[in-house]
Image (cartoon, rainbow, N blue to C red; front, side, top):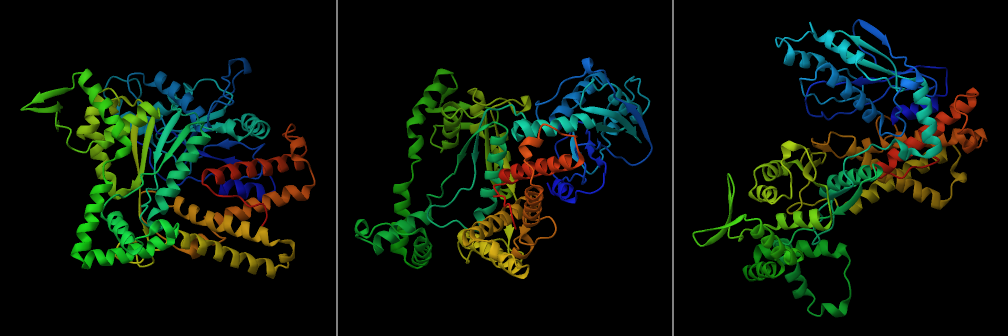
Length: 561
């Protein structure tokens, strides 16, 4: 997105666009990382090509129009190129199962070497990795996407995208909307379990990453035409909630008469109840009894009997020493006395909510739990025996996944605590982000004399959009699996990889379009005509893409700064 912003705001002399496409040819997992495309000023007319290091051998991919495979509106660029690479790999090495990856990234992968290590010595006709790369390039099906291909060094496969195809794709997006660029996913409905607020306390910094990442995943699914059911596992019903309830009953015996209490008051009450819980044994006992009265997973109670009936009807439940059990390879589910609410919730989500993909978003501290739960848990195994979930080796849906994330740290390098130390309340954090954003905006507008052009309402809305967006972007730009240190100074900077920088770039693009006094809607049908028109359409295309990216991240774009 930063590269697109730089491309549109430059509006300078022609510069070819060069994108690096990684073609991992071995059966390996996706690697997380941050990919950036190179900047461009003439996207509508320039080549999108792959660059490599070392000697290159080029191959033209010019194909008669009647032989070309039409790929417009067939998913993302990555998906369309992946289809071509899959076809080539099946022709090149039909005896080896290979899962190709195509990434627009700043590095080139030498996966041909990995493939060579699998087939050398097996009677293959290939003499070296470069020969494999040459064959992959040669066996790519005819397509209007590809301008040419080249192979460098030990099998690096590079693809140059067709200028005409890129221009048509941009024009199609401008005319028909950016959803024509949406990826095509193999599911229609997903359940995302994220955020997990504790209703006994206010939300705090510890809820930040789960909420932001979960919401962004939901938006990405929805952009891909997947219906998303957002779910919060409201916790917890344990000791904390019991002691809070008991404390409130003591403090407000006539609670029906006093009306509702603000959640902010609960934070004070929670601290007071914790102190009393630690120092008053009688209160502690009453609080624990309150917990017992709360427990029961009552929502799923009506679904317990249908689950048992299903297991009985499928012959999964057997009698053993007077107990009703399910025998599986490693574990035995005994008497159903264990809390198997996870199974009940899965059945509900699979059979009632019709979920094809269930995703849990929690911190990496729970990674081992989910890994074990999804792989060897007796309940998951029983669910597979009942036919609810497929074998994970089959890579079929429905399926369950865990999305882990690192912790948010303070300036002292320690994680935010929730029980024994003061924590930053989420509302305070967001208010501070907005306040700092407004202060910096007022200072800049005062210095450049443009403060008179802004209304109070515009200042409030812009400060909120920039401040909140800065918090979200700062979280999402970091490696999801590692910890990061929270810093207002870094996230609200207008330099570097920040939301503020991107908001300024988007606002400048909008300013360029406004000052042109041209109707962009009328220009959309004439891509590639006069240079000013082409550049304005590049600006408009970039603005549309940026706004969609902002939407996916849950950030409100601003149109002037």
